Length: 282
Image (cartoon, rainbow, N blue to C red; front, top):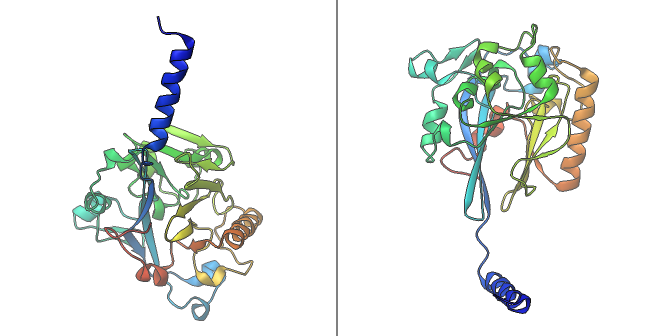
C-alpha cells in the first residue's frame, strides 16, 4: 500500500517532469479559397455610384482555418461559395449572376483535407452567394449558427436572396446554436464568432488572432464595398438597417481597439492582393 506521502512525491515528480518538457506547438493558419465571383452588379442597390465603388463585381471567397494545439488539429470552414461543386464539375459553374471555375473540394484537397475532415462549419449568413457548398459539410461537421439565422433559413419565407435547396442538408446536421454571445470556436480565443445582426436576422463575423499577421476580422456582408465604410449606406435588401449600423459600429470599435484588419469578403480588389490557398496566413 502506497502511503499518502509517497503518492505526493510521485505527483510532484510527474509535475516537475511535465514542466521540463517543451510545450507542444500551437498554431492557427488561415487559407483563402476562390469560390466564385458575382458579375453585373448595379451599385445603386447599395446606394452607391459606380464612381464611388470603382470595380462593381464581387468575389465570393471562402476560408479554411486550421487550429493545432497539444498535438490535436481542428478545422473550421467559413462560408462556402456561390456555385455548388457539382455545377463546376459539370462545366456549368453558374448560379444566378455568380460564376466559379474551382471547386471547394479541390481547394481543400490541395492542402490535405476532405469535407469529412472538417470539424466545424459556419456561414456568415444564409444568402445564396455564401452557402453553395454547405451540403459538403452537413454529414461530418458541427454547424455553428446564430439562432435567429437558423430560424429564418428554415422558415416559410427566408427572403429573396436565399436559396434553401443549397443549404437544406444543414437542417439535420450536428448543430451548435448561438444566442448572440461570443462563441470561442477552439476554446483559446484564437477564433471567435461574434453576432453582427442586421444584414440578415443572424448575420455573424469571425475574429481571428494570427501570430504573425495579427488579428483579422472576416466580416461577411457587414459591408460589400470599401466605399460603404464610414457611411450610413446599407443595401436596399438589408433585413434591419438599424441593426446593421449598430453591428458596424460595434465591429469598427473592435477594429480600432485591436488594430485588426477588416476583410470585406466581397472586396475583389483586396482579394486579388491576398495569398491564395495553398499559401496561408499565420
